[in-house]
Length: 130
View 1 (cartoon, rainbow, N blue to C red):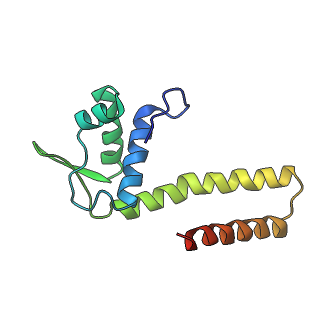
View 2 (view 1 turned 60 degrees about the vertical axis):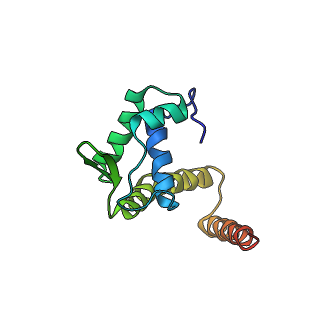
């Protein structure tokens, strides 16, 4: 992953999102130790305090838990928490923006649904070819 230093998303949020994606992909498993703030700082060439802030976001959301003296580990329900969070916050917001843009462009509900179905089918075709 590349950190976008100039973007609108704070670096610590990008770190948390990257770790969430790694958990969702199964690259970091339940009860497995995740990267320390120092490992993350070295990996992404950032301040350890910034990395710690990203880890604390995950702890606040109960995605990771701390074992004193050992580090942070992935909780049993981490994937479910991440999925719910992303559906509720990210996906819902994207859909609201999509519907608002469709209204501005005078695209009716039926047309919009067809566009979504078509995009889903194209996505399925791409997944089938791998």
